[in-house]
Image (tube, rainbow, N blue to C red; front, side, top):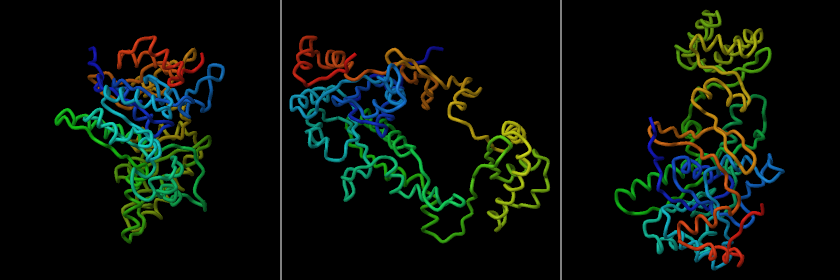
Length: 396
């Protein structure tokens, strides 16, 4: 059965975001059919230069995965004439999203209060480290800074054995979560606009996003309690690691019976005040069993018994298993002359189109297309803007 057009088909988005906290959200909107125009400075999004590099070193697949399906125009926002051009585009769009430090867009004359004069029903979303107001709002922030400032890193540390300082890392959890929640807030605002005709201003704080995922730790520190949450950590096998979560009584029974040790149910009861002590003893006993077997064999036996478990895998391996294949979980996109594989969209709408679009626009490649289709400018007019230094396009 042919699917209907994407749920956001017909929605226009001007995307002033860079790196991840913002671009991932607009990538998801493009997956759902929105026309997303990425507005980039002459130097391009910082992520365009991120490794690894392909195509004679000219393209970043990291950038491509997070920005596929978007059009790109490159404008020097420091040029007053460029602001006039942007305001004309604003009058033709539904959504503006930006993740500059608070005050930067307002300094360009592109704050929410400026744009509503040109599009009264505009939906204007801002993503920042600490929010658009308050004493910390002007501070620079990337995901690792927010992970530290929010308490996330120390919460993770509290579950580590023999570790006396926060773990090293380079993940962008706060970025991806903030971008995803910005996308959710924007779609809610689009529904509101459909019902009432009114636009909306959205303020997403990465700090608040991270605080919201620390529910257990927040209440553990507010109310006196002995920690009853076990460490869900790796168990060694003879060639790798396994994680097992016998959380419910049935899970525990399934595990003990699967590995041939039903006596564990009596030896290490998990429904008593000694739960954490017994959990640790259970994991020690389990590891004696797993060390005699491969991770694949352990996983197969325990899963067959019904207890949740998984061996630790590399990311690339997870993208090539039978589950990914059965759900068409990997798609191919093309960035210039090179193609590569990325995970498909996590947004599965079964009756309408939802998929990463298989192209990555080069910097400024859509200047002509966007300005013609949105504003009706001629080829000559667009060329004149490029020659004046207002518009830019990457050299091919």
